[in-house]
Amino acid sequence: MKISYMLVLLTVFSIFVFGCVQTTEVMEKDNSIKKDEVMIEESEVIEEQDAMMEKSSYAGKVLAGTESTKYLDFNKADYDKALKEKKKILLYFYANWCPICKKEQLDTFAAFNEINDPDLIGFRVNYRDGDDDEFEKALAQEFGVSYQHTKVILKDGQRAGKWPDSWDKERYLGELKKI
Image 1: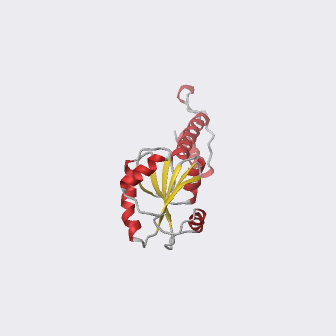
Image 2 (image 1 turned 90 degrees about the vertical axis):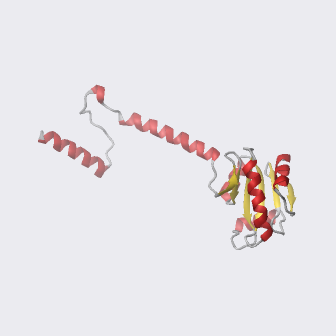
Image 3 (image 1 turned 120 degrees about the vertical axis):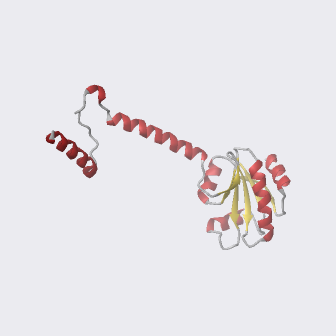
């Protein structure tokens, strides 16, 4: 009895210390588990989950939206992903010191909370407020943005429109349905 207890203890110890993954066939054939088959099944599940997350998720902070349509705090990786996926994109150039921007964001949030368009994504892009990074500055320059609360809409990666005026929720809904 002590010898079998010692063998079990030694096996457990070797698995923890040496990372052993080979199994010995000490169990009866009917009760044995094949470690390699289990690992293959687990890796297939993990690969499927990764593919689903890669297909449908974005890393940036979600500011508003539905399950299918998000309005995110801008980051380059998400923007590049949206371009690659040929999403319709709203870029809202936002300054944290701008009272118009702060007020208008409530309408932006309300519109994105109603829209159910999986081909649309929105980004709040920092603009001349100390929170903007080099890519956001380059993006503003690329689209000729010279004023905060400017909106740019892209379709197939190309500018479909640019508006420097303020929008209410209904205007957002109307303009975003047009693209």
